[in-house]
Image 1 (spheres, rainbow, N blue to C red):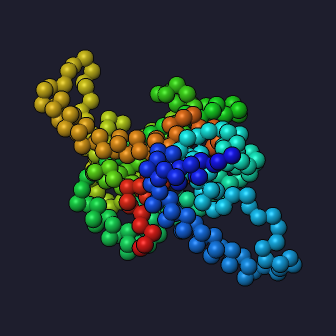
Image 2: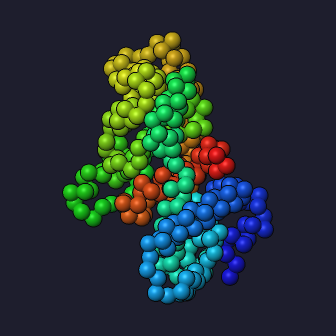
Image 3: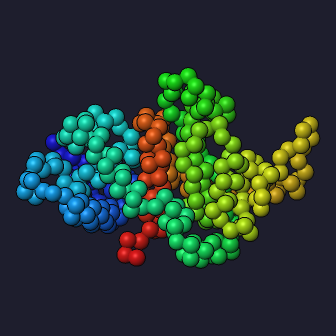
Length: 299
């Protein structure tokens, strides 16, 4: 049976549709994963007391490109693992293992945000903050439904009264053009307030940085938000105009969230274990940043 990668590589213009990233980005990612795996293997070999000859054992059924394609295909289309295994002609357990193994490499090589990429280096992060201060950053959150937890105490923790279902929430801070993820908090219980998450994120940024948010962020420091309609009264025409202007500026964060949710694993009900959610959404954020040209492997 011809696997999806063989079919797509014969029509590279379909690559983004099937995998979520372009063919050139995929090839670059394969090279980076290969180098990272070789470096890890060399580090393990230096500590290992070998009994069997190097290269012994059963070789993997899928090559590196096919294994990475399996992972991307799952993120993009969210099939059940039985279908994924059928498409790539492997067992269900091997498909599951291959997905999580390659998700680890995606998360390692594709930082989910600018802070994740440079936050460990104080000098580089300070330089980035100076650049970011010249614009107003946009903040928003997104919720995703998950299967109802089996434990009764956990059910209450994740039940969102707003969505009327059990959810996981992520909070994003993006640039004013919506083309870069500055910081992100991933996979917290849905009932947690947006403004509470945002205040945690503000600690990572300059104390003079300005932000733009929706009505959920009313009261946050240095944050411009729309005017709420007073009880039993109406907004004036000028207030409505101001709200429309804020909405026009905020729309770019909605576009970025749409780009994330092109990957069906973040738009459908989440079926994997909750412990894997942060890695999944971090991997998708990294892939979107790669697609937007914010990660350059040549640097």
